[in-house]
Length: 270
Image 1 (cartoon, rainbow, N blue to C red):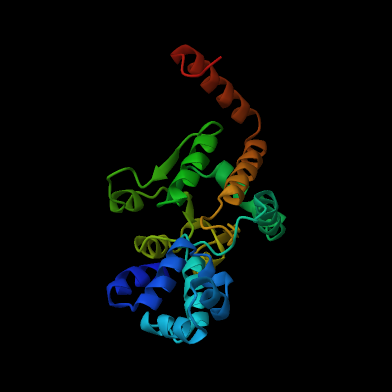
Image 2 (cartoon, helix red, strand yellow; image 1 turned 135 degrees about the horizontal axis):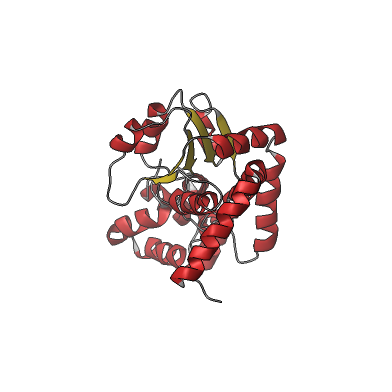
């Protein structure tokens, strides 16, 4: 994968000609131009020529401005926060599209099977790294209110070997792995091969679908510099509600008991 165009500009800036530096400065101030403007438009904005702009991108190591654009878009596709559109993005429409695409792709019978497993397993283990960790943490917080023996990995500052060795018969593992996944993630997937494992991921995580029991794909959007986790959080909410219904009365009894503890410990605002 090629470097970020802006990083290459910074790296090559000292060796650029005055006209090339004018182009470099313009792109540093208007990074969206890399993917939204043509060679002619960049030349016009910098009072240079199309030939100078083309030569500038070749100096950075690209065959053309189009090659640089594709490299920048490829960075975004790999999860690097890169501006690829202007301020006209409709955030509400983007979120609704992510949710619609996610839930349209989920099969009800698969969700029923997963929620039943989460309700009846002797233990549920949730594993998430980097941006996936807060989603896993929220999942644990919800499940722990309606059932016992729910654990979250990795624990801060701890290794995974001991916990992955300590597997209970019938345990269900939920892996949460969104771009950009850590290198250890594939090893965790491999270590859990043969276990009851559910993977919640973005479309790129489907490479693991032969190694896990179920894959639930969430769409995170690709228009903004940063991905949205609205769809994964909504999916977690759906699954927890389904688990609650599967468990039934004992889930309600547990939530009431926990609420009483909140009051005794004076933990929540009233």
